[in-house]
Image 1 (cartoon, rainbow, N blue to C red):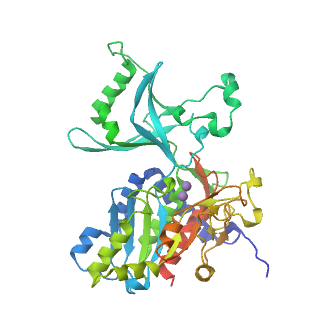
Image 2 (image 1 turned 90 degrees about the horizontal axis):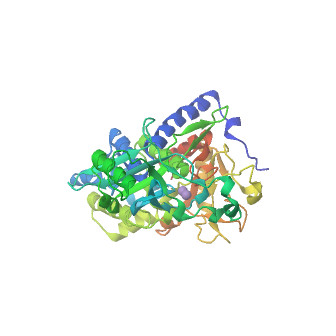
Image 3 (image 1 turned 60 degrees about the horizontal axis):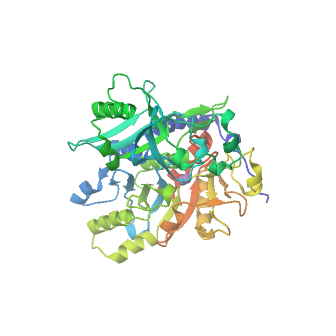
Amino acid sequence: MQFEKKSIWQQIDKETNEKIYEYSENYKNFLDSAKTEREATNYIISAAKDRGFISLEEALKGKIKSGDRIYLNNKNKSVVLFIMGEEPLEEGLNIVGSHIDSPRLDLKGNPLYQDSSLALLKTHYYGGIKKYQWPTIALSLHGYFRDVNGIDHNICIGEDDTDPIFYINDLLPHLSKTQNSKNLKEAIEGEQLNIVVGHSTYGIEGEENPIKRNILSILKEKYNLDEEDFAFAEFEAVPAQKARDVGFDRAMIASHGHDDRVCSYANLKAALEVENPKKTAVALFVDKEEIGSVGNTAMTSMFFENALAEIINNMGEYSDLKVRRTLANSSVLSADVSAALDPSFKDVSDEKNEAQVGYGIAMAKYTGSGGKGGSNDANAEYICKIRDLFRDENVIWQISGFGKVDQGGGGTIAYILAKYGAEVVDMGTAMLSMHAPVELVSKADAYMTYRAYKAFMDKFE
Ligand code: MN
Ligand code: MN
């Protein structure tokens, strides 16, 4: 029988169409409220608490049992949600693994300086960005620091319509003869991604760096921030733009950070709705995926394994073997975005094997680059079972190829969870303009991603 691809929009009824748009309103709210990993952690934990989740510390004081809902806050930058199932843990978990960090610009430790008639902030970009895309767009600053009195400050400037925004300059075309002859990768250099934060010297006395000193006095007055505090802070610049509907039909969403908030939000919504699953369901929201999943808030850290060991220890006699069995018997959806076919850049894709926006949750059996290098190549036996589930639950899916052979490639957290012996497959939303300041996804795909994760947590065996 011929394998036919059909768009979600051609297969749904009126009710589902309405659900897609309703889901998207809530997703946009998440995008606007959770632009950094810290804000996402906050949002996820507060939503989880409203739904009856208790912290792991709290849960460990009593006896954990099936039906319990538990969250782990890992250093305010990553979260795990557990929905305890009926079966013993050693039968394995159903895990959906997403990440909550996105490409952006981080401030350096000594960022503020004055040059010519401007005050600027030095940045170091985070993740795989195309540097030329970041000048001349509205930026906001999000961050955390502790002041001299030991008080914690979470700062967000540029998101409210009455806030100022921040800005990176680019060269005018009139003087771009040299820049125009450079390749895209070098036309804007990392050290040119300097953020304009001030200009006035009104009322400031003295000759030395009056603009910078003016900015410092504003920072002191408003946030009790001293210049030294930057060195101990975490500040991120992201696009100030809110998530917006795209197109006459409003069927897509443009926003910063769809990678990987489109999967994270679907993961969260599924986890909040799952009730008394047979197998324990786990929703992972990890940090630092965009820079290689390293560090103690990332997937290569032991925090998830440690949390699981605590739970196993709480529920009965502890053994290392029980932890290993639990992980090895687990099933994982690596919930990350993949590349969709772009009609303006078709030459990088094998159309027959590429995902398309609006055609359902995208399964990448393997990712990697140059001969599947670095990829988790999912086992056929495992993904056949996923296909059966999707068929039973009317989840619309498609395959994703991530570009032509030898054109490039990508990776996710899939291989890290596979290390335990768990079955893992990449299953996420196909999108356009990945890692651009503002990215594009289909509302139908976003909704179908949630439906897939929900079915997996509820029913996969
Ligand atoms: Mn991603
Ligand atoms: Mn990414």
